[in-house]
Image (cartoon, rainbow, N blue to C red; front, side):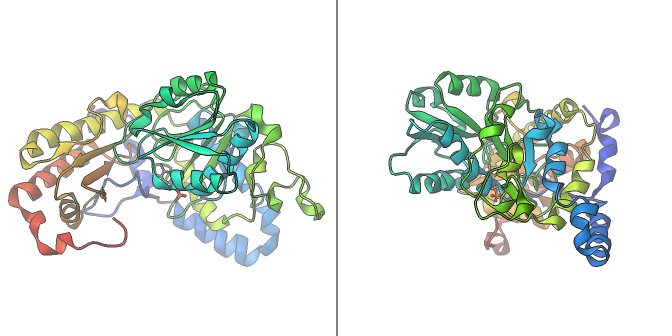
Length: 404
Ligand SMILES: Cc1ncc(COP(=O)(O)O)c(C=O)c1O
């Protein structure tokens, strides 16, 4: 595929892309849609400043978590009422783990990945902290060893659909089926796949799923996350953060908690309306989108980058860390190099923005909505220039910042 026959080319104009920048970090923080500032401005000046508290009804603030959930639902193959936007992914993992454990009270094992994004592991620790009988069974990278880990003691399996470091993509339907065959509950972390890979949560019969909205969904820094529950669980979602937004009658202000039915049961307290407003604007870009076209372009972009980089930069010690086969990876490409950190800083100084993950991984994310094939060629050329000239070896490029 080339820019001249890219069916998604028109989407680029929806985004604010700074001059001189090739942005390959949409897997960390997506680019801003051009409408975000005016939508936030309206929420601040009109809905907050002028309409004040009436906006909870008049502007639909109270319903915003489910309104936004319904916009995300078609992107992840979920029924409209099965997704809610709220809290962070970490908090939603915690809630999903508890909901899953409550469905399997006689079982005692959580299966998770040793190398998953650490917060997923930290949250399993949190879930275990007040349940002394629980144990954790850690499997290898990208779902390796999941079969051996499954037995009649496993209550829940928590896996990332796309690995945050390598970009390896797991077979959601096949793994969910195996987990169910073992009688366990399946939770998927969709942080690195939502908005960039066609996902079929309902068809795959997944139990729960969580994901970020600030990556490929472009919701903005700290945009709230989403959580999905299969409809068959909607009437018995038990989660530990029993706040008033999940109450069956929140405005009755009763002293005892009584959970609402449906996906709202995953809410806790008052939601960040301004952040949700930015996300609302971002999700408009996805209206009616063909996720298969997004996936096709994503595969073509990442494949082009892999080919160009291996061809021109292999001799400088750059090695592919992501799966070589596009069907096996998400929308990111990672390479290793002993001087990865400095190389990434040199790239960023030249306007090619990716990121670095310990110990030696340089990571590039490809958002098909706003990247062109020309961007990919230019980024690969810049990487080659930096390696061939030794430019990365300047002292300023080895100084670390708090965020890598
Ligand atoms: C796979 C994965 N899970 C969870 C998180 C954490 O999300 P949050 O900081 O929104 O809780 C991230 C963040 O990058 C992630 O990549």
